[in-house]
Length: 299
Image 1 (cartoon, helix red, strand yellow):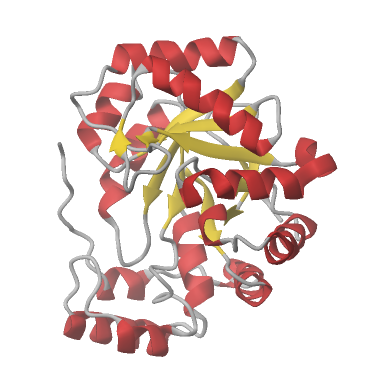
Image 2 (cartoon, helix red, strand yellow; image 1 turned 90 degrees about the vertical axis):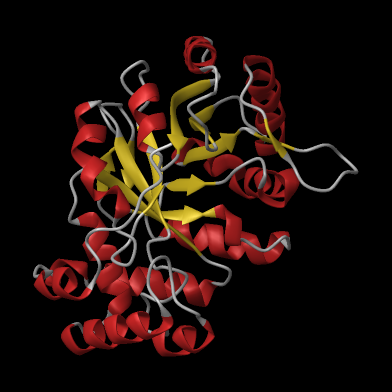
């Protein structure tokens, strides 16, 4: 599997990444998926302390074992929960970031995090404190690089120029093209985009008809618009799953597409689709059939 440089860092990550959120809480089932991904050349795994309230990190840490040094592990911080209480709240304070990092290190059974990401953020956050904290953790060798999971331009404009962040995780797909106007800015700041939502909840896979029956629209698409768009795309492209991956990876700012898998079968479908992306070079039909101008929350 091909790899791309993550921003201006020394990290090179696989064009397909494994999203941890979809992994089973059954360690045996999860291990089968992770091992299959690593054997296929995937070297980037994305998780978060919030997923299954820490259990996802624990499972991934236990599975990696001796293979840890061959894997670039990304996790996230900022959504704080209290044991025994429902829900969570936002906490991007320097003290909590440090506390949460050490908890993630313990759950992942590792001495360092490769990419530590702020799991959101608003313009009102203490960005000087956040950046100083990340830089300190990097200097201490507890993290190798850091970034943010956000699609808010005002947050990115505040965070990226003032930091050495190398990663921006964003929802992006042929059905959600909101980030496109900001890709050049992100690249100019020495960062790469790692996409989530690449297959748009399965709508951009070869199971699109089944998914469409359960969908009441998507993003800014009404149900009727979605039907027309997907039918049109399927008439132009033989494999919508391959199209989804190829569409994202045509952008040089995008280092990797994070795609989850709840079974080996799902992962196999993604890997098979990836093998076809080089044959997809004409995206004219995508541009004609999808919405290229969509509202983005600039707050």
